[in-house]
Image 1 (tube, rainbow, N blue to C red):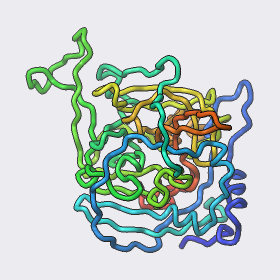
Image 2 (image 1 turned 45 degrees about the vertical axis):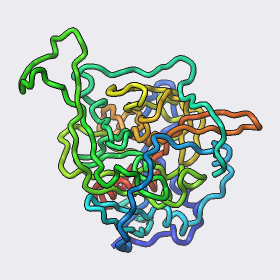
Image 3 (image 1 turned 180 degrees about the vertical axis):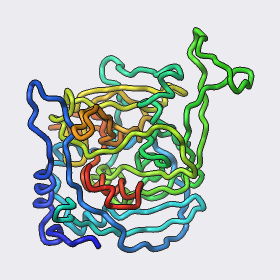
Length: 380
Protein backbone atom coordinates (compact mmCIF):
# COMPACT_ATOMS: atom_id res chain seq x y z
CA UNK A 1 0.00 0.00 0.00
CA UNK A 2 1.10 3.55 -0.67
CA UNK A 3 1.52 5.47 2.56
CA UNK A 4 -0.28 8.77 3.01
CA UNK A 5 2.21 11.44 3.77
CA UNK A 6 2.53 14.97 5.00
CA UNK A 7 1.48 16.00 1.46
CA UNK A 8 -2.16 15.93 2.56
CA UNK A 9 -1.34 18.04 5.61
CA UNK A 10 0.88 20.69 4.00
CA UNK A 11 0.05 23.46 1.58
CA UNK A 12 1.51 23.22 -1.90
CA UNK A 13 4.13 25.96 -1.30
CA UNK A 14 5.56 23.79 1.48
CA UNK A 15 5.43 20.79 -0.83
CA UNK A 16 7.35 22.63 -3.55
CA UNK A 17 10.01 23.59 -1.04
CA UNK A 18 10.17 19.97 0.07
CA UNK A 19 10.62 18.76 -3.50
CA UNK A 20 13.38 21.31 -3.99
CA UNK A 21 15.11 20.21 -0.81
CA UNK A 22 15.45 16.62 -1.98
CA UNK A 23 17.29 17.72 -5.10
CA UNK A 24 20.63 15.96 -4.90
CA UNK A 25 22.48 18.38 -7.15
CA UNK A 26 25.97 19.52 -6.21
CA UNK A 27 26.67 23.26 -6.61
CA UNK A 28 28.48 23.90 -9.91
CA UNK A 29 32.27 24.30 -9.77
CA UNK A 30 34.76 25.13 -12.48
CA UNK A 31 36.14 21.57 -12.70
CA UNK A 32 32.82 19.86 -12.09
CA UNK A 33 30.89 18.01 -14.80
CA UNK A 34 27.27 19.07 -15.35
CA UNK A 35 25.62 16.22 -13.44
CA UNK A 36 22.05 14.97 -13.40
CA UNK A 37 20.48 15.87 -10.05
CA UNK A 38 18.72 13.10 -8.14
CA UNK A 39 15.11 13.80 -7.27
CA UNK A 40 12.83 11.82 -5.01
CA UNK A 41 9.53 12.32 -6.75
CA UNK A 42 5.97 11.98 -5.45
CA UNK A 43 3.80 8.99 -6.25
CA UNK A 44 0.80 9.46 -8.55
CA UNK A 45 -1.60 6.52 -8.77
CA UNK A 46 -5.12 6.09 -10.22
CA UNK A 47 -7.98 6.14 -7.74
CA UNK A 48 -11.12 6.07 -9.85
CA UNK A 49 -11.74 5.55 -13.57
CA UNK A 50 -15.10 6.28 -15.20
CA UNK A 51 -16.36 5.82 -18.75
CA UNK A 52 -17.18 8.93 -20.76
CA UNK A 53 -19.33 9.46 -23.82
CA UNK A 54 -17.58 9.05 -27.14
CA UNK A 55 -15.98 12.36 -28.15
CA UNK A 56 -16.52 14.44 -31.24
CA UNK A 57 -13.45 14.70 -33.44
CA UNK A 58 -14.24 18.09 -34.91
CA UNK A 59 -11.43 20.44 -33.88
CA UNK A 60 -8.97 21.78 -36.41
CA UNK A 61 -5.38 20.75 -35.67
CA UNK A 62 -3.37 23.77 -34.52
CA UNK A 63 0.36 23.35 -34.79
CA UNK A 64 1.19 26.12 -32.33
CA UNK A 65 -0.21 27.57 -29.13
CA UNK A 66 -0.28 31.29 -28.47
CA UNK A 67 -0.71 32.60 -24.93
CA UNK A 68 -0.64 36.18 -23.62
CA UNK A 69 0.70 35.15 -20.21
CA UNK A 70 4.49 35.44 -20.05
CA UNK A 71 7.12 34.70 -17.39
CA UNK A 72 6.19 37.54 -15.02
CA UNK A 73 2.50 36.70 -15.40
CA UNK A 74 3.11 33.06 -14.49
CA UNK A 75 5.36 33.99 -11.58
CA UNK A 76 2.63 36.21 -10.13
CA UNK A 77 -0.02 33.50 -10.36
CA UNK A 78 -0.96 31.94 -7.00
CA UNK A 79 0.17 28.38 -6.48
CA UNK A 80 -2.64 25.85 -6.88
CA UNK A 81 -4.07 24.02 -3.90
CA UNK A 82 -3.55 20.31 -3.33
CA UNK A 83 -7.06 19.53 -4.59
CA UNK A 84 -6.49 21.66 -7.70
CA UNK A 85 -3.22 19.84 -8.46
CA UNK A 86 -4.98 16.47 -8.14
CA UNK A 87 -7.62 17.73 -10.56
CA UNK A 88 -5.06 19.02 -13.08
CA UNK A 89 -3.10 15.74 -12.97
CA UNK A 90 -6.18 13.60 -13.39
CA UNK A 91 -6.36 12.59 -17.00
CA UNK A 92 -8.45 11.53 -19.95
CA UNK A 93 -7.61 8.45 -22.01
CA UNK A 94 -8.69 8.10 -25.63
CA UNK A 95 -8.71 4.62 -27.19
CA UNK A 96 -8.34 3.72 -30.85
CA UNK A 97 -11.98 2.57 -31.04
CA UNK A 98 -13.12 6.09 -30.12
CA UNK A 99 -14.06 5.36 -26.51
CA UNK A 100 -12.60 7.36 -23.65
CA UNK A 101 -12.28 7.33 -19.87
CA UNK A 102 -11.46 9.82 -17.13
CA UNK A 103 -9.15 8.83 -14.28
CA UNK A 104 -8.86 10.59 -10.94
CA UNK A 105 -5.49 10.30 -9.22
CA UNK A 106 -4.05 10.34 -5.73
CA UNK A 107 -0.75 12.06 -4.95
CA UNK A 108 1.49 10.85 -2.16
CA UNK A 109 4.99 11.21 -0.81
CA UNK A 110 6.44 7.94 0.44
CA UNK A 111 8.46 8.43 3.58
CA UNK A 112 11.14 6.10 4.84
CA UNK A 113 13.98 4.23 3.23
CA UNK A 114 12.16 3.57 -0.08
CA UNK A 115 12.74 6.88 -0.66
CA UNK A 116 -7.31 34.22 -22.55
CA UNK A 117 -7.31 37.24 -23.46
CA UNK A 118 -8.46 38.20 -26.95
CA UNK A 119 -5.97 37.61 -29.70
CA UNK A 120 -4.43 40.55 -31.48
CA UNK A 121 -2.71 41.07 -34.77
CA UNK A 122 0.82 39.74 -34.73
CA UNK A 123 3.56 38.56 -37.02
CA UNK A 124 4.45 34.90 -36.67
CA UNK A 125 8.13 35.55 -36.14
CA UNK A 126 9.55 32.40 -34.65
CA UNK A 127 12.98 32.88 -36.23
CA UNK A 128 15.23 35.13 -34.14
CA UNK A 129 17.89 36.91 -36.20
CA UNK A 130 19.84 34.41 -38.29
CA UNK A 131 18.09 31.07 -38.71
CA UNK A 132 20.18 28.66 -36.63
CA UNK A 133 18.31 25.46 -37.51
CA UNK A 134 20.11 22.53 -39.13
CA UNK A 135 18.53 20.03 -41.50
CA UNK A 136 19.59 16.48 -40.64
CA UNK A 137 20.39 14.51 -43.81
CA UNK A 138 21.44 10.94 -44.50
CA UNK A 139 20.47 7.72 -42.80
CA UNK A 140 23.74 7.70 -40.84
CA UNK A 141 22.29 10.62 -38.86
CA UNK A 142 18.52 10.30 -39.24
CA UNK A 143 18.44 6.66 -38.19
CA UNK A 144 20.88 7.03 -35.30
CA UNK A 145 20.39 8.29 -31.76
CA UNK A 146 19.40 10.93 -30.72
CA UNK A 147 17.82 12.07 -34.01
CA UNK A 148 16.10 8.71 -34.52
CA UNK A 149 13.96 9.35 -31.44
CA UNK A 150 12.06 12.13 -33.24
CA UNK A 151 8.85 11.00 -34.97
CA UNK A 152 6.07 12.72 -36.87
CA UNK A 153 2.40 12.70 -35.86
CA UNK A 154 -0.25 12.35 -38.54
CA UNK A 155 -1.85 15.56 -37.19
CA UNK A 156 1.30 17.45 -38.25
CA UNK A 157 3.26 17.74 -35.00
CA UNK A 158 6.42 16.08 -33.71
CA UNK A 159 6.81 13.51 -30.95
CA UNK A 160 9.69 11.76 -29.18
CA UNK A 161 10.17 8.08 -28.39
CA UNK A 162 10.33 7.67 -24.61
CA UNK A 163 9.77 3.90 -24.26
CA UNK A 164 9.39 0.77 -26.39
CA UNK A 165 5.80 1.67 -27.31
CA UNK A 166 5.37 5.25 -26.10
CA UNK A 167 5.67 8.71 -27.66
CA UNK A 168 5.67 12.01 -25.78
CA UNK A 169 4.19 15.04 -27.52
CA UNK A 170 2.19 18.23 -26.92
CA UNK A 171 -1.46 17.96 -25.88
CA UNK A 172 -2.57 20.62 -28.36
CA UNK A 173 -1.45 18.34 -31.21
CA UNK A 174 -4.43 16.08 -30.50
CA UNK A 175 -6.86 18.19 -28.45
CA UNK A 176 -7.65 21.90 -28.58
CA UNK A 177 -8.86 22.04 -24.96
CA UNK A 178 -12.50 21.58 -25.95
CA UNK A 179 -12.49 18.74 -28.46
CA UNK A 180 -10.15 16.23 -30.08
CA UNK A 181 -8.74 17.20 -33.44
CA UNK A 182 -10.11 15.56 -36.55
CA UNK A 183 -7.17 13.19 -36.98
CA UNK A 184 -6.98 12.02 -33.36
CA UNK A 185 -9.33 9.03 -33.74
CA UNK A 186 -7.03 7.39 -36.29
CA UNK A 187 -3.82 8.91 -34.99
CA UNK A 188 -0.59 7.51 -36.44
CA UNK A 189 3.08 8.02 -35.72
CA UNK A 190 5.58 8.22 -38.59
CA UNK A 191 9.14 6.86 -38.52
CA UNK A 192 11.63 7.99 -41.16
CA UNK A 193 13.03 5.14 -43.26
CA UNK A 194 15.26 5.11 -46.34
CA UNK A 195 13.27 5.15 -49.57
CA UNK A 196 14.83 2.26 -51.45
CA UNK A 197 15.52 2.68 -55.16
CA UNK A 198 13.54 0.64 -57.68
CA UNK A 199 11.80 -1.23 -54.87
CA UNK A 200 14.96 -3.17 -53.99
CA UNK A 201 14.92 -4.46 -50.43
CA UNK A 202 18.60 -4.59 -49.69
CA UNK A 203 20.05 -1.89 -51.87
CA UNK A 204 22.94 0.03 -50.42
CA UNK A 205 22.49 3.61 -51.54
CA UNK A 206 24.76 5.22 -48.96
CA UNK A 207 27.46 5.78 -51.61
CA UNK A 208 25.24 8.17 -53.54
CA UNK A 209 26.61 11.74 -53.59
CA UNK A 210 23.06 13.08 -53.08
CA UNK A 211 21.19 12.90 -49.76
CA UNK A 212 19.11 9.75 -49.55
CA UNK A 213 15.41 10.08 -50.02
CA UNK A 214 13.45 9.13 -46.94
CA UNK A 215 9.86 8.10 -46.34
CA UNK A 216 7.65 7.63 -43.30
CA UNK A 217 6.55 4.26 -42.02
CA UNK A 218 3.41 4.68 -39.92
CA UNK A 219 2.24 2.91 -36.75
CA UNK A 220 -1.27 3.36 -35.33
CA UNK A 221 -1.77 4.72 -31.82
CA UNK A 222 -3.55 2.42 -29.36
CA UNK A 223 -4.40 5.00 -26.70
CA UNK A 224 -3.62 8.56 -25.67
CA UNK A 225 -3.37 10.19 -22.23
CA UNK A 226 -4.02 13.94 -21.78
CA UNK A 227 -3.94 15.68 -18.36
CA UNK A 228 -7.07 17.52 -17.29
CA UNK A 229 -4.96 20.59 -16.65
CA UNK A 230 -4.84 21.00 -20.43
CA UNK A 231 -8.48 20.11 -20.97
CA UNK A 232 -9.49 22.74 -18.41
CA UNK A 233 -7.00 25.41 -19.38
CA UNK A 234 -6.63 25.40 -23.17
CA UNK A 235 -3.56 27.65 -23.27
CA UNK A 236 -4.58 30.05 -20.52
CA UNK A 237 -2.57 30.51 -17.35
CA UNK A 238 -3.27 26.92 -16.29
CA UNK A 239 -3.38 25.09 -19.60
CA UNK A 240 0.01 26.12 -20.92
CA UNK A 241 1.63 24.33 -17.98
CA UNK A 242 -0.04 21.05 -18.97
CA UNK A 243 0.47 21.01 -22.72
CA UNK A 244 1.74 17.43 -22.95
CA UNK A 245 0.35 14.03 -23.88
CA UNK A 246 1.56 10.44 -24.06
CA UNK A 247 0.75 8.10 -26.95
CA UNK A 248 0.90 4.31 -26.71
CA UNK A 249 1.58 2.59 -30.02
CA UNK A 250 -0.14 -0.62 -31.13
CA UNK A 251 3.22 -2.35 -31.52
CA UNK A 252 6.83 -1.73 -30.43
CA UNK A 253 8.85 0.59 -32.66
CA UNK A 254 12.19 -1.28 -32.10
CA UNK A 255 14.28 1.88 -31.92
CA UNK A 256 16.41 3.29 -29.17
CA UNK A 257 14.38 5.77 -27.14
CA UNK A 258 15.28 8.68 -24.87
CA UNK A 259 14.42 8.56 -21.18
CA UNK A 260 12.49 11.34 -19.50
CA UNK A 261 13.93 13.21 -16.53
CA UNK A 262 12.95 15.92 -14.07
CA UNK A 263 13.96 19.30 -15.46
CA UNK A 264 16.84 20.89 -13.53
CA UNK A 265 16.89 24.65 -13.16
CA UNK A 266 18.33 26.59 -16.10
CA UNK A 267 21.49 27.44 -14.14
CA UNK A 268 22.22 23.70 -13.78
CA UNK A 269 22.01 22.97 -17.52
CA UNK A 270 25.26 22.79 -19.51
CA UNK A 271 25.72 26.35 -20.73
CA UNK A 272 22.08 27.04 -19.80
CA UNK A 273 21.23 25.49 -23.17
CA UNK A 274 18.59 23.09 -24.51
CA UNK A 275 18.29 21.01 -27.72
CA UNK A 276 15.43 19.57 -29.76
CA UNK A 277 14.62 18.23 -33.23
CA UNK A 278 11.32 18.45 -35.06
CA UNK A 279 9.50 18.45 -38.36
CA UNK A 280 9.07 22.19 -38.98
CA UNK A 281 6.41 22.96 -41.59
CA UNK A 282 8.59 25.31 -43.60
CA UNK A 283 11.01 22.44 -44.33
CA UNK A 284 8.67 19.61 -45.35
CA UNK A 285 10.13 16.12 -45.16
CA UNK A 286 13.18 17.27 -43.21
CA UNK A 287 14.09 16.69 -39.60
CA UNK A 288 15.36 19.99 -38.20
CA UNK A 289 17.71 20.25 -35.21
CA UNK A 290 18.39 23.34 -33.11
CA UNK A 291 19.80 24.46 -29.77
CA UNK A 292 19.64 27.72 -27.83
CA UNK A 293 19.95 29.33 -24.39
CA UNK A 294 17.18 29.53 -21.83
CA UNK A 295 16.03 33.15 -21.42
CA UNK A 296 13.71 32.70 -18.43
CA UNK A 297 11.87 30.01 -16.51
CA UNK A 298 8.97 29.38 -14.19
CA UNK A 299 8.22 26.27 -12.16
CA UNK A 300 6.39 24.76 -15.16
CA UNK A 301 7.79 26.48 -18.25
CA UNK A 302 11.07 27.22 -20.03
CA UNK A 303 11.22 30.39 -22.12
CA UNK A 304 13.73 30.47 -24.96
CA UNK A 305 14.20 31.80 -28.46
CA UNK A 306 15.14 28.64 -30.31
CA UNK A 307 14.31 29.07 -33.97
CA UNK A 308 11.19 27.01 -34.68
CA UNK A 309 8.12 26.89 -36.89
CA UNK A 310 4.73 25.16 -36.52
CA UNK A 311 5.20 21.43 -36.85
CA UNK A 312 8.00 21.36 -34.28
CA UNK A 313 5.38 21.43 -31.51
CA UNK A 314 5.61 18.30 -29.37
CA UNK A 315 9.36 17.89 -29.81
CA UNK A 316 11.19 16.54 -26.79
CA UNK A 317 13.51 19.16 -25.29
CA UNK A 318 16.65 17.43 -24.03
CA UNK A 319 20.06 18.00 -22.51
CA UNK A 320 23.15 15.82 -22.06
CA UNK A 321 24.63 15.58 -18.57
CA UNK A 322 26.80 13.26 -16.50
CA UNK A 323 24.99 10.36 -14.82
CA UNK A 324 26.99 9.85 -11.66
CA UNK A 325 25.46 6.47 -10.76
CA UNK A 326 26.29 4.97 -14.18
CA UNK A 327 29.56 6.87 -14.75
CA UNK A 328 28.54 8.00 -18.21
CA UNK A 329 27.01 10.88 -20.17
CA UNK A 330 23.27 10.57 -20.74
CA UNK A 331 20.65 12.53 -22.64
CA UNK A 332 17.21 12.95 -21.10
CA UNK A 333 14.05 14.74 -22.15
CA UNK A 334 13.34 17.51 -19.65
CA UNK A 335 10.48 19.23 -21.47
CA UNK A 336 8.08 19.31 -24.40
CA UNK A 337 8.23 22.13 -26.95
CA UNK A 338 4.82 23.78 -26.89
CA UNK A 339 4.91 26.77 -29.18
CA UNK A 340 5.00 30.51 -29.54
CA UNK A 341 4.03 33.26 -27.11
CA UNK A 342 3.62 36.97 -27.59
CA UNK A 343 3.86 38.80 -24.28
CA UNK A 344 3.11 42.44 -23.52
CA UNK A 345 5.99 43.69 -21.37
CA UNK A 346 5.23 47.20 -20.12
CA UNK A 347 3.34 47.91 -23.31
CA UNK A 348 6.10 46.52 -25.52
CA UNK A 349 5.47 43.18 -27.30
CA UNK A 350 8.06 40.46 -26.70
CA UNK A 351 7.96 36.98 -28.11
CA UNK A 352 9.25 33.64 -26.84
CA UNK A 353 9.12 30.02 -27.80
CA UNK A 354 7.98 27.99 -24.81
CA UNK A 355 8.60 24.46 -23.54
CA UNK A 356 6.68 22.70 -20.79
CA UNK A 357 9.08 21.51 -18.05
CA UNK A 358 8.91 17.97 -16.71
CA UNK A 359 8.47 18.73 -13.02
CA UNK A 360 8.62 16.02 -10.31
CA UNK A 361 4.82 15.69 -10.41
CA UNK A 362 4.71 15.45 -14.20
CA UNK A 363 7.58 12.97 -14.18
CA UNK A 364 5.66 10.76 -11.75
CA UNK A 365 2.55 10.95 -13.92
CA UNK A 366 4.22 10.30 -17.29
CA UNK A 367 6.38 7.53 -15.84
CA UNK A 368 3.30 5.81 -14.41
CA UNK A 369 1.54 6.11 -17.77
CA UNK A 370 4.51 4.32 -19.33
CA UNK A 371 5.24 1.63 -16.73
CA UNK A 372 2.01 1.20 -14.78
CA UNK A 373 4.15 0.76 -11.66
CA UNK A 374 4.91 3.67 -9.34
CA UNK A 375 7.86 1.77 -7.84
CA UNK A 376 9.71 2.30 -11.11
CA UNK A 377 9.08 6.04 -10.95
CA UNK A 378 10.65 7.00 -7.63
CA UNK A 379 13.72 8.83 -8.92
CA UNK A 380 13.69 11.40 -11.67
